[in-house]
Amino acid sequence: MGGKIFLNHEKFKIINNDIFLTDEISKESVDLIVTSPPYNLDIKYNSHNDQISYEDYLKFSHKWLSRCFEWLKEDGRLCLNIPLDKNKGGQQSVGADITTIAKKIGFNYHSTIIWNEGNISRRTAWGSWLSASAPYVIAPVELIIVLYKTRWKKDEKKQSDITREEFMEWTNGLWNFPGQNKKGAGGHPAAFPVELPRRCIKLFSFVGDVVLDPFLGSGSTIMAAVNNNRKGIGVEVDKEYCEIAKKRILEETKILNNESASILIEVNKECQKIQKKQINQTSS
Ligand SMILES: C[S@@+](CC[C@H](N)C(=O)[O-])C[C@H]1O[C@@H](n2cnc3c(N)ncnc32)[C@H](O)[C@@H]1O
Image (tube, rainbow, N blue to C red; front, side):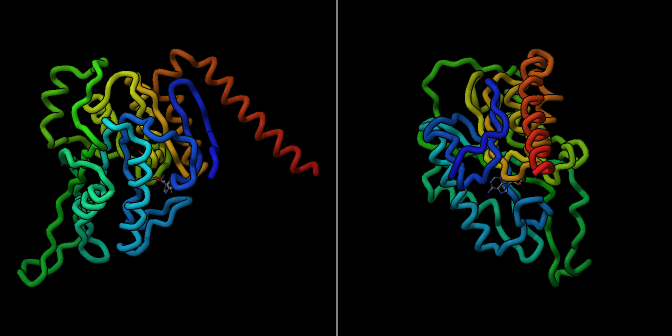
């Protein structure tokens, strides 16, 4: 167990820990979770094995979804970005299977948003070419499954900041915007574009709400949260990815414009601590 706070700021918090071990997030404290877990597609993450059996992947999904369930408030929501299906190493109905697991845990199903990222490069396997023998059908889309804990309708009269145009466009559950490349995500191998959490946050949470990403990666969800006046919390097992997230959040959010001085002091303090530690290690 343990905390392992990587960076704590009044507007966001990065926890460098395993989501199964952290005790840094209180039960029933989160309004909205926006996340994309590892897809088990053999992505070369620094600190996570992304190639396990499908059975083990479903057990992993059950475990982390259970933690999220505990962290959500009664009217809390979860926007879960996952693949529709899996074509490599045997066909699997990933979206349907994970939704079933979430419902067994206690989540209620609300809807599914289809995200068309226009990724035609995924089209590599055709199965039996021009033959009905065994063709492959691949939909170049991902899902954002929208779930909630106990009740969908929120009682509180808090502030919404979504515009008329955004509301009209985003409540149509077919979203079209491009995916995120590795370079633009500071080198993280599997980031989603900030546009994804931005839409989820503005559509499904109020100004001032607490937004969590238990698989923070390069920090996209916190960036969207901070830029839209929500409090962002992220958990990431890999320290290097926490560094990437910190850099992106500081460079690409409004925090730097408004509060550069205080945040940089905090960052500098951290750097000094690390330098001191290194000097002590080399001299002993
Ligand atoms: C698909 S990526 C998330 C990318 C993120 N949405 C972004 O935009 O950068 C999944 C992340 O989960 C992290 N991860 C895997 N297992 C974890 C665990 N048990 N606890 C915390 N983080 C974990 C990986 O290191 C990886 O960065």
